[in-house]
Image 1 (cartoon, rainbow, N blue to C red):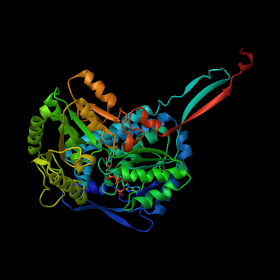
Image 2 (tube, helix red, strand yellow; image 1 turned 30 degrees about the horizontal axis):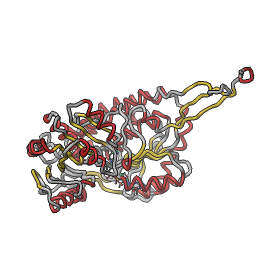
Image 3 (cartoon, rainbow, N blue to C red; image 1 turned 45 degrees about the vertical axis):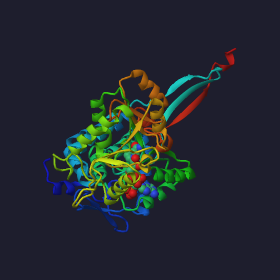
Image 4 (cartoon, rainbow, N blue to C red; image 1 turned 180 degrees about the vertical axis):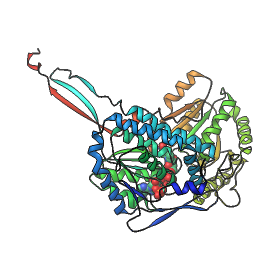
Length: 493
Ligand code: NAP
C-alpha cells in the first residue's frame, strides 16, 4: 500500500452520503469505530438520525426516474469502472477491513477479489435483462413481458463481509436501474463509506447511492420502511432482525430479499478423501474466523473415520497463528467485539458442561483484542445446546453418525437452511444426499462455494431470495406483462 494507515483512514469519508455530498448528521451526533484486535478507536463517523434517513431517501427518489431511463450500457460501464477502481485500491480496501473487522489481511484481500466480482458480474448482467414474446394459448392475445427496476431500495448489511455484502446488493441494484439507501453495520462502516466514494469516483450519478451509517439501526430503517416511496428492502444479517423487518415490510407490502443466519452441516462419509475433507473443513470453518453465515457449524462424521478426522483437524487448528490480522503471519484474527467472543466462550463452556470433550482450544485469548482459540469439540450430540446455535466463531463440534439416513436426519434437524457440505467419493451418494438436504447451498468435496456467478441464498429460516448469478439482478426488477389484442383474433377459427 502506498499510503500509511493514518493516511488511509484520512481518505475515508466520515459523513453521511446524501445526494452529492458527505454531510454531518442533522443533530451533529457521531459514533466510534474500534479495531477488534487492539480495542483502539480508529475513526469517528457521523451518526444518522431518522431525519437524515429520510433526507437520503429524498435524494434517492429525486433521481429514480432519470436513473431508470439511463441506458443499461451506461449503467454497466459505471459498474465496470467501479470494478477497476476497487481493483486499483484493493490493498486499501483489504487494510480497512482488517482494521475494522479483524480478519487476517490475506483473507481481506480474498474478500476484495470476491466482493469486487459482483461489480464485474453485474456490469455484464446489466445488458442482459431479457423479456419474452409469444401468443396466448387460445390465440386471442400477443404477450410481451419486460423487466423494470423495482424502485427505491433500502439495503442493510452485516459486519462480517464489509465489502462483499455491500457489492452483492449495490451492484445488481445499479445494474437494474434502482436507486438506494445503504445502511452499513455499525461495527464496520468504513469499508462501505470508502466503497461509496469509489463508486462516485467511477461516475455514479449523485443520489443513486446514499449511505447512512449510524449507531441506531432502527432509527434509520424504520422511517424509511414506513415511507410510501420505498419499494424494496434487502437485508443480510441475523434471523431475529430479519423477522422484525419482514413484519415491518408487510405493512407496505415491500419486496424483500432476506439473507439470514445459518447452521451449516458438514458431512464426512467413510468413503471421503480425508485430505480433501480436512482442507474443506479448514475453509468452511476457519474462513472469516468462523464468522460467516456459511460457516460449518456441525461436523457430522461417520463413526469409522471420526477419530482420525477429529485428530487431524485439531492438529491443523493447533498450527494456526492467532493475532492482529495486519501481521502477514497471522491466520486467525480476533472476533468482532467482546460480546461475540463471550458468546462463543459461553457456547463452548455449555457444551463441555453437557459432556463434550475439548480436543484443542477451548479458551479465550489473552491481552487486548477479542480473541478465541480455534477449538475442536467431540462428544457433542443432537441434544447438546451448541447443536442448535449459530456459533459464529472458530469452534468445530463433531457429532458422529452411523449411516447415511442418520446423517441426513441430523443435517436437516435445524430451522436454518443456508449452506451445507458433503464429503464423499460416491457419485450416487452425492445425488441421493443433495436430493434430501434442505439447504439453499451445497458444497461437494469443497468447503468454499461462494461465487458472484452463483445464486446465493437459503431456505427455511435462512431467508428468501438469491444474490449473485442471473437471479441476483431479478431481485431488483418487477415483471410487467403487456397483453395486446391479436389483430387476427377474429379471423382465427
Ligand atoms: P444483525 O445484528 O442482524 O445486523 C445486520 C444489520 O442489521 C446491521 O446493519 C445492523 O445494524 C442492522 N440491524 C440490527 N438491528 C436492526 C433493526 N432492529 N432494524 C433494522 N436494522 C437492524 O447481524 P450481524 O451480527 O451484523 O451479522 C451476523 C448475522 O448475519 C449472522 O446471523 C449471519 O449468519 C448473518 N449473515 C447472513 C448472510 C447470508 O447471506 N445469509 C451473510 C452474512 C451474514 P447495526 O450494526 O447498527 O446493529
